[in-house]
Image (cartoon, rainbow, N blue to C red):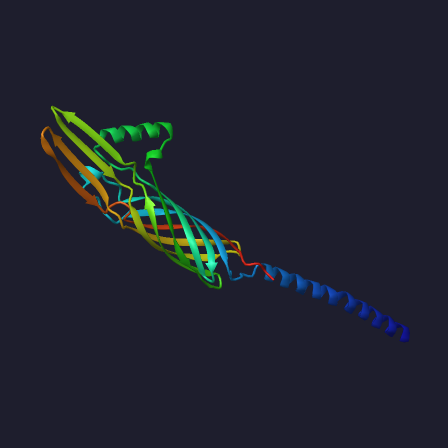
Length: 254
């Protein structure tokens, strides 16, 4: 009887010795997985985002007979980088591409655009822009709020300079659609991991430099007649898009 009792105690001890390390290992493994997936707040973030959405024309089409016109809604793509220079503060660089065709009565420009599209389909619709500015990041658990302001430049088509002469009368038309603009926007991000977020972005551009169309008529022995029209329609738009953001913390861990 005593032998059986000792045998039972031995078996119980072996069971306890075996189960306790196993439980500890499982707990440690669970803790490791939990720590691995824990979202950490970034001290000095570097972020790169890619977004695609709609660009809405908020500036109308001033003097469309000279400058041409664009669609009310177009496709918008943005690649944006944010680099921290202080706690919560970043400098950003934005490369934007708007996709729309400028409708114009300029025969030379229409022929040029047609040739470009023959070489690379859709090339004439690409309207590039660049912007620089400052952004601020607020984080709350997995959520991010990133408002920003800056200035930039965009091109809504190459500048044109056409001149014709008939019976001694010279007519010249110079058109520039490449204004500077003020940019304000914000991104709302949801962090799916420490390295990636899904973002919803709103961006507004307003021209701080008007586009000009200068029409000059010259006759022999008569001072030239110059008519200038200005437009604030270009780089006057609102973009709403969604995308992904890749991020890392530049602050070295101790």
